[in-house]
Length: 241
Image (cartoon, rainbow, N blue to C red; front, side, top):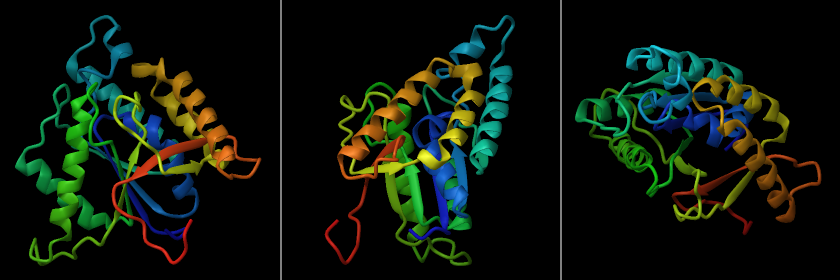
C-alpha cells in the first residue's frame, strides 16, 4: 500500500486494536492514511477486570469507561473510531449488525483490513470477529449488493497477533517496523490501563521481542519495535520478496 490510503480495523473488544495493532495504525495515520477503528463490543463483561474492581461499578459504567478509554487511545494513535455495542462474552453478530459493518466497509473503502486470527480457543469472540470481517468483506465486494454504493475492492486482510500465538496457530509473515511511532502506541496503551493495566508491560515487551526478530530477518539495526501480522490472502507483486 502507498503511504496514503485507507486502513480499517475490526476489533472484537474495545482494547484489542490498541494492544495488537496500535503501532500499525499510528504508523499509517502518521503517513497520511485515513485510519478507522470499528469496535464490535466494549469488552465490558470479560475484558475490563480493573474496572469491575471499583466499588459500585455497573455494566453501563464499564461501557462508559471503556468508550472513554478507547476514544482517548484512538486519538493518541491518530485514528477515528466507532462502537457497535454488540456485547461480549459472548459476542453476537446479528443480520442488522452485519449489514451495518458492510455499510462501514463501503463508506471507508479500505485498502487494508486488520482483524483477529481465525481460531482463538481462549476467546471465541475473536473467532467471530474474524469470520464477520471476512463475511462483510465478501458482501461489500458484491456489485449487486446495494447498487447505489460502490463495491469494495480486494482489500488485503491482515490478522494481528493473538495473546497466545502458539495455541492459535499464528504464524506471522510480516514483521512491521513501528519504531517511529512507538511513543504513540505506548500512550494509547496507557489510556487502556483502567480496564486492563496488566497488559501494558506484556505488549511493550512483545514489541521489543518482535523488533529483535525483525532485525534477525533483515531489518536495519535501528528497528527496535515491531508488530507481527499474517496475511489472509496471497500478496501480489512483480518480485520475490
